[in-house]
Length: 487
Image 1 (cartoon, rainbow, N blue to C red):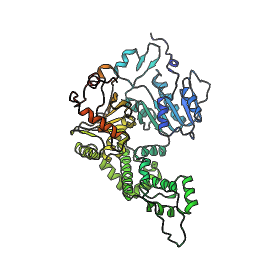
Image 2: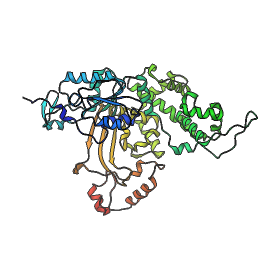
Image 3: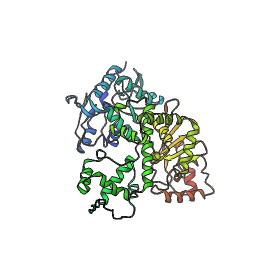
């Protein structure tokens, strides 16, 4: 006979935002303009932190805040609730009720686990009773996605391990998915828009007012993002007002931008933008999302600009998606990436890159990574990404302080098996599984901060005859003994 389940004991005190709220913040949903509701807020730690940041946030909890109203909000969080409810019907009702409250997006999270976790408690219903008389149901990533979709009858988008977004607003969903494929140009690239300053030649016989550099850089950055000349409705209102005040029309302002724009960079921006649109469309097809009505108008406009028709773009995207399943195509793309200084190839077995380089890869590799994201969520939370060329696998490597340590330690490895639609998670914190990441400059691009120093350090390591850095290299204790340095 099991004692009554003490659900409230699962609530914890927080010193920082919980994982689902961290993902909401990362993707711009906690901008202060959207109302937030935390369904099952526990002791209210997240609410206190959100309110302290000026965000309108309310919450309800059956034990700690039962008198608070269940209030509709733009963003609703159901954080680690469904895994502690032992009644399957009540669990589904909580999920449905939370989704009903969401005007824009619902974040759903639950505990992930492996079979070994069931040794920690007594079997009860479809989970376990823990030593604290709380209930826990552990999911795999795929099981959690399937459960959410079966209850809500709409797609759940993985954003991280055990965290999914479910959109009520399908237009917002498409904008979210498109942002994942857009390349963010660094400030250093925008600076290259400007060549040597020269006076513009007036076209009307009157002196044409010269735009300040900051406005030219802002317009150039927007052109880089779009891969084309911006229209008035492509610009933030404040920027448009500044441009009109200076030159009266956007066209006059853009003439000055083009006079100082590096045409090679514009070609690169156009290629990046068109590739990003193809990747976005290919992943929509992969996820069985092809409703053009939900597609933002600017996206449809850009598709027609780069591909003439949406039908032509979708045909190209379908071909791109199919090519991501061909090892020979993946091999060629990995070779291209490595030759461009993007990552390190281990023979013809795999390509490993730093995650910040993902949006610089050939489009077919971005589709490959996007298919993995469907199962796992945002793969760029990892430090290193490994593309397995022949096996249909994709591995995430999370390390301890990648940029701060010349030889960082591997903390966690996530293997995503695309063919079987499954995920394996391996923790490397126990002594027998500890390992180091050697020669990390191989995974960096020469324009990344710290590359030169890291390359010099790695060259010194290669010169030590006692070190065999082939394969996974020596165990940590052996490495530190040879170099005679304590970690």
